[in-house]
Image (cartoon, rainbow, N blue to C red):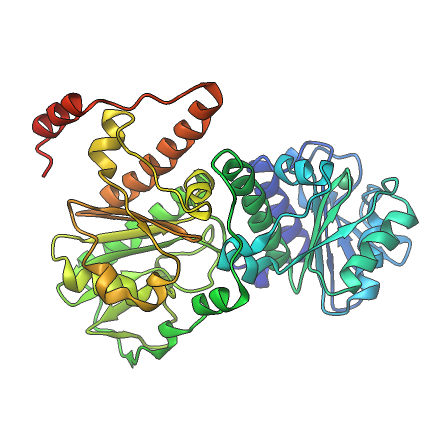
Length: 429
Ligand SMILES: [Zn+2]
């Protein structure tokens, strides 16, 4: 079900389940609220296990009075109320203590979201609230002051993070994307300096080339199209569960016929998209009334140039992205699986994916099926959807293995003779 149709109680429980389910809060920490059209605030209760929250646990507040609910509101209710009173555009607030963002709050450093254009677009710049005791009016003032400066995501000194949005899904997307940025930056610190993008570089990613495709009426849906839609939905949900994608990032496409493919839509929550959301692109036109991912032009060029490629995926998983934001690529000669599945991985200079799609599509092939896009994502391709998805997972696992190995000692790669033997045994070209 889409969030905009859910009752505030249901939204709060569903989002808290996502936050808890992905290890971004503890049983006791974290609270979420929604300001409704009457001015009442719906909020999670204090002292209730976040892992087993139900709709009956949610509290409705009018000013300082409980008007519905059997529990007291979260002890952090004062700062939720303070934020709503200072920012009329914010209708939902999410607060928690995810480990990566807490780490930033301990060293009093603000995670830079301009390492990735999408993260910057979702979170904006991040504000900072000085320490005050939890539940106090002072913490409420510190936090509301930061939101009043226009920040939608605020780091709480020696505490955690709070995000706001026009609705709860937007507040959650900011929270999740900021957590992803923090995890990426922590991983990147082992590799070198993460490069922040300049505003004009970020603007390059925001060109709406997807909207420039003409619209066309869809043909009657074929059986292969129907099964592809189902497989793609499953793949995106799985990638989300495996934390290879976030709610706002990750694209999948699959070829339907020589001149048509299905691609994931622009701006739809990856965890709740369904088969009807995928957009058919046929002969360079998009299915009427739907907006494909901004990567549609690059995918179109790859399908045109590479007849053996039938599926493409891209994702910002946190270990791979640590490489791409530091301008590093991964040497796949670490274990046979990585070498066979990923092959040589080129690093694509930032911006080419938005402006040089035609040439870039000719550098990707069945023999060079994966690329790291600088300050962006990993791009994988395959003869099938499963193969493209497997490459996404293997890329992330390999990047994670290298990051872990660097903490243990110098990495020893597989030697050339052993690589030749792998190439022969697996028929690599
Ligand atoms: Zn807290």
